[in-house]
Amino acid sequence: MAEPAFTPRVFSGIQPTGNLHLGNYLGALKRFAETQNAGISSIYCMVDLHAITVWQDPSELRHATRELAAGFIASGLDPRQSILFNQSQVPEHTQMAWVFNCVARMGWMKRMTQFKDKAGKNAEQASLGLFGYPALMAADILVYHATHVPVGEDQKQHLELTQEIARKFNHDYGLEFFPETQPVIEGAATRVMSLRDGSRKMSKSDPSDMSRINLTDDADTIARKIRKAKTDPEPLPADADGLEDRPEARNLVNIYAALSDQSVDQVMRDAGGKPFSEFKPMLADLAVEKLAPISSEMSRLMQDVAEIDRILADGADRARAIAHPILQRTYEIIGMVGAKP
Ligand code: TYM
Image 1 (tube, rainbow, N blue to C red):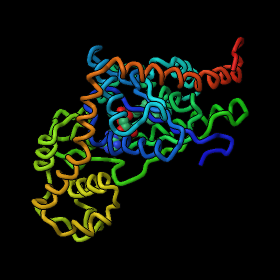
Image 2: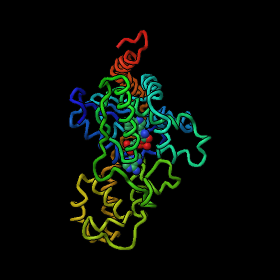
Image 3: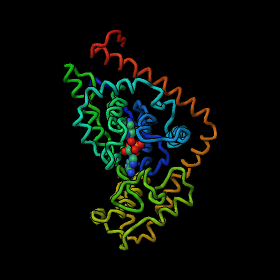
Image 4: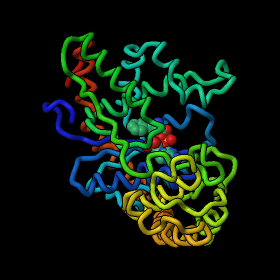
């Protein structure tokens, strides 16, 4: 846990870049709903400012932001209990990000593997925003003094950087102002892999739609994608140890475990030794049972975008009420005249 002085508060964000997929659901959304239901104060953000670090078509961004909000609600997030909003509507995020741009060091940013992956060979042509992305992410979290951040494994390095920024700020100004936020990376599905290649992460940006299950896929599509998922020719091993060198098999078992709220060992007790011709239909049935209601609830919610916009606006007001005094206190610590915490 964080410093006792900090009340537990959860923050997490998802980019509204389309194609919300099973990785986002199992690595993030499903766990957010569990946190909320455990009664922990939670803030969830559609990070539209992060999305524009690479080109976004304006009408697609608008659609994706609303659809993401619908995805949160359909996954069990109650907008009265948790705070749901889009990042651009709480200006304290970018204001805090500027402060952190001045705390973070170039060398720290250059180590970020996500920047290297996204910028590829053409780093000179990447936006400055893509390079500074992790400082905005640290601001998202620390402007609420969030103590815990549930994410998938791919965000671990960014969260370590968030801790580094908090530590340097606290050290430079000589006080324990920002918490050392803890990443919460738990469960069987913190890294859901592509259905076409067990060595690659399931991702929105994979050109093959067969590589992922989208939360908007209908039951037939979900079943077809699982049926066609790449596997090796052997049946499932007898126990979890046998999954070690079998990435595709391990991925499907992890997905089954996460969807059914069981441990991998429990799943292997029932499914160990089964051929994929038996296991895949079991997984398809389970995936349809769990995901189809989310998909249909998302479509229902998307029929009333005015209501979604209202929910986001209300969330932004509530988020701002927390972020504003923390930003002002930060300004005061730094020595900005006129800061009013
Ligand atoms: P994003 O939008 O790429 O992903 C949203 C969440 O989904 C998780 N995730 C996965 N989990 C398991 N398996 C996968 N294949 C998979 N793919 C994605 C991600 O780990 C994440 O939890 N930088 C963040 C957004 C962000 C953020 C924040 C997160 C901005 N500010 C502050 C936490 C706190 C991102 O791009 O996530």
